[in-house]
Length: 366
Image (cartoon, rainbow, N blue to C red; front, side, top):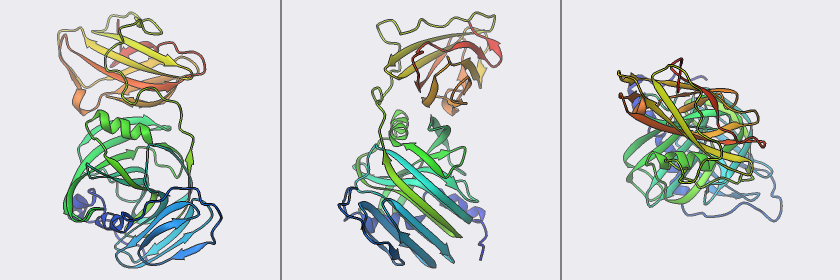
């Protein structure tokens, strides 16, 4: 049976995480384990609310009604089928969670409303968070104010914050914030560089606390569907400090500021800081004209071998070649004589030069 999408009134509430997901974590809070079982366990079928460990991974199963069958397989593999439900959340992962890199693969099929996401909790402060990789008929960002974005793992994720008031949580009924990264290009499989999301949230003032559990979750709400997911921990790349510099360093950058010339009413300077196979670049855009800039897109060309893995204060697409950085809500306006600074982190294969060919809204910058 296929259920109808949420009515508008319910949609306004839906963004602040499906209520049942918060209930599920009450069950999970008491169990703390790490991946790495000493021996393989037999496959297991779960049909009632519980948490535990299986083949070295933490798992959580929760539903409030309906038919939900979760099958726990080898390593980080699980599958789930659901129908006739109001809300269900299941998944495998870690307890406690961390900034680690997460690999996952499999399938996700939903008739109606559902999510596939890296999902977890922290305490002090109490935070519930999502990195949404795929979703069904309902976009979880609907109705929320977009705070910014992060470009990582091949896509831009939009960042939101919502609040739950007097709702179930891992410490009981409480009021708490939810942090969201919602992927613009849906997928079911790949790498989630968790630290990039945590760092992007922190740059926007969305701070996490002490980690509780973290799972690659399948969630359904008034829908039917199935998923078959395998999750594992990937290698964490060597990154620069988690908070990239917001002002040019006192020492000269690796590459001199780019001055491509042109007659546009804009000036662009940048400061590259490189290491081994990575770099960061902070780009300052200055309005040298007499009229305000209201909304902007900065286009530039990355040197061969460079690819953007995350960014701040703008959205970036694509990750390599000729890139367009577009303003976010809070820095769209640049008054005459004013400036704004954006930046990104990138990998490189030996060429750590600065980008070139800057144009702002189609006009070349000096």
